[in-house]
Each structure stands twice: as C-alpha cells, then as structure tokens.
Amino acid sequence: MSRRPISPRRFTRIARQALESVPAPLRGRVSNVEIVLEDWASREALAQQGLSSPYDLLGLYQGIPLTERDSRYNLVAPDQITLYRGALEAMCESAEELEREIRATVLHELAHHFGLSDDELAALSGGTEGEGGDSPRAQGP
Image 1 (cartoon, rainbow, N blue to C red):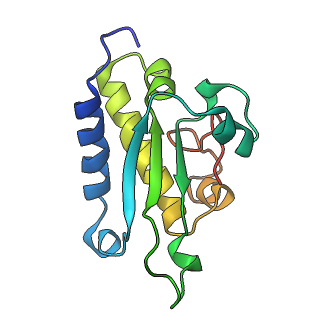
Image 2 (cartoon, rainbow, N blue to C red):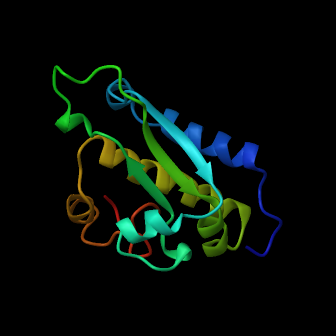
C-alpha cells in the first residue's frame, strides 16, 4: 500500500461494519460468528488451503456452516472469519481500496457461513471471483 496502513482498530471497525451491512433478513441468520484480525496467515492455514505464499490468503472462514448445523449444535466455540491484514494491505494502493477489499473479503467469508462453496460463489458472480476473500489469490475451506 502506498499510503500509511490503517490502524488495527479502524481495520476491525470496517470489518464489523461490513458484517452489519448485510441485509436484515440475512443478518438475522448470522449466528455465533466472530471476526479475527491477524497480520498474516500461518503456515498451517496456508497448507490447509493448498497455498504457499501468505500474500495469497486474504481471509478464511473456519466453523460449521449454517447448512451443516443440526439440533446437536450447542455450546460450541464461535465460527471465525479471519482477515489477514498483511495480504490485504499488500494488494491495495489506497486506504479506500483497502476498505473495499476488507468489505468484500468479509462478505465472501460470510457466504461460507451460509454454506456457499467457492464454486457456488464463482457461479453467482458470473464465474469471476475477483474480489476479496477466497479469490484467485486465496482459496476457501
């Protein structure tokens, strides 16, 4: 990023605002999800996604999608949407672009919470998963 990076506090606020921007009928179905901010993806996270470069993973959903929850789903740790600040900042040239990518990544990872796969997301977006989350730079669960 050519400009000074945004603060972790602002980064988190943008991510939470993205989550809150989901239309009410869907937002009401978001359940037991937390947003986590990390500087870079771990080697383990990269290996699980079949990636080698930390620049290639922008975000990651880890948890039990709504489509897989049943009556036995209780007393479980929250699902996590992890955002990788270093990768997101590296791909953006301005704070405004970074804000757009944070939002796109959160929404992409939230789609996994609703049970959509990367292939389904690509089909919904016309076959081009070009922004945020598990884009060609990053792969999903």
